[in-house]
Length: 139
Image (tube, rainbow, N blue to C red; front, side, top):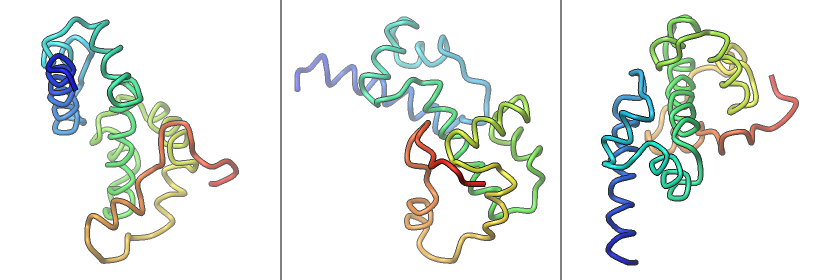
């Protein structure tokens, strides 16, 4: 791996780490590009080439993963969870959740609490496979 590629990967990891830490905050491309020290367009292209999805899709998936956990482990309302994880609209949250998970937030909640066990296993069992690859016909 060349030094330039290694440096580019580090910059993208910094931005992705910022997204992981502040997923519930309003994040936009200019802010993330500044974190990575690149232009907006270069950031989008490089992030996608590095991680296989756009920054927007990554952030949506990260927010939905957190919502999946909150839906099954807390008694907060779906609306409250929607806003807690960074979505500005319940409609967008529900549509995005269904696209990623394959079922509505309410249907996901009906699955009940996550069984006790190591957190790494629970996260693996409940993580959606990938954006847009939710199984059809559920929920």
